[in-house]
Amino acid sequence: MDWGITPNGLLLPARLVRKPIAIDLFCGAGGFSLGFIQAGWKIVAAVDNDPDAALTYMTNLGSYPINIHFVEEADKERLNAAIEKQIELNKKNGVYHYFDVAGSGWIKHNPDAEPVRDFWFGDIRKISGKDMLKTLGLKEGDVDCIIGGPPCQGFSRAGKQNIMDPRNSLVYEFARMVVEIQPKMFVMENVPDILKMMDPDGVPVIDKFCLMLQEGGYGKWEMLKKALVMQANYGVAIRNSCKEKRKDKTKQPGAEQLSMFSE
Image (cartoon, rainbow, N blue to C red):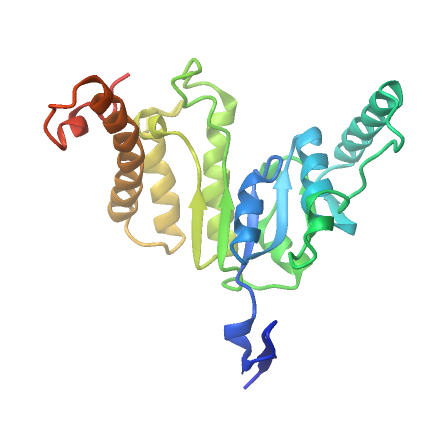
C-alpha cells in the first residue's frame, strides 16, 4: 500500500491524502476553478478559447512556467496578440510592469494552493480527451471531476434564444469530453432555459446531451435528464420563491413551483 503524509504530519494511505483532481472546460477567467481549489481540489488542466480570459486565468491560477498547449498555430498568434495589446495598454497607463506573467496573481499569495500547470488554448472541438489524458500522464477514470460552463448566451432569456446560435452546440462538446475522459463525476454550469431549447435538428438540447452521456456509460438518459431538471428547478424555484414572498406574504408555501419556467 502507498502511504502519504498530511500537512499536519499524519501518515495515511495515499488515497486519503491526495487531493481529488479536476479538469476545467470552458474555464473562462477561472471562477469555477478557484472555487474548487479553495475547496481542496487540484485542477490539473484548463481549456478556453478566449485570449483575455485565458491570460486572466493563467495569471491568477497558473504556474510559472506554465505548459500552454496551442490547438492550432493560429492560436499562438492570437494569444501573443492579446499579450502585446496588454503591454501597450499598461505602458499607456503608466504601469511599472508591462505584462502579468502566469502565476503572478492570486495563486502567488496563496502558497498552500496548487497552481494549474497545463492550459489548452483553442477550439475545444479540435481537442481530444484521450490526447489530453496522455499529455497529463493520466488514463480514463483517473480524473475525479470535470467542471465547466459551456456558453449560455444562446439559451439565456437575456439573449435572443436563437436556435441557430453556433455557441449552443458547445454543450455537446462538454458531453463528448466527459465521455472521452471518463471522470468519476462532472459539474456543468448553465442557465435553466437550456431545458427548453431545441437544436437545429429539432431535438431538445438536454435530451441529446443526456443521450451522449448514456452512450458513454453514465447511466440511462431518462435518469440523467431527471436529475438535471430537478437541479435546474430547484435553483429557479428559490429565486421565484423569494420574489413571490416579497410580493405576497400570505401566499401558500410551494405555490411558486407553478411558475418555475415562466418568463
